[in-house]
Length: 73
Image (tube, rainbow, N blue to C red; front, side, top):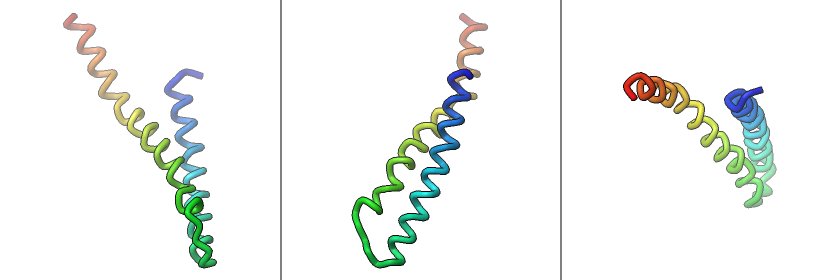
């Protein structure tokens, strides 16, 4: 498995973790027992989702840049 496929797999698992964290957060809010750590539970996978998503977003642009650079240089 190459690096890009690993990032995609990590991104998929992070999306599952984020969804579970949001569900736990909603359930905790319904029970009116607000704890700070429950509110922050979804923040960690969300930050990692942002990073992996930005990486995957930039991949096609980086490939175009590399191929154009290889032709002219």
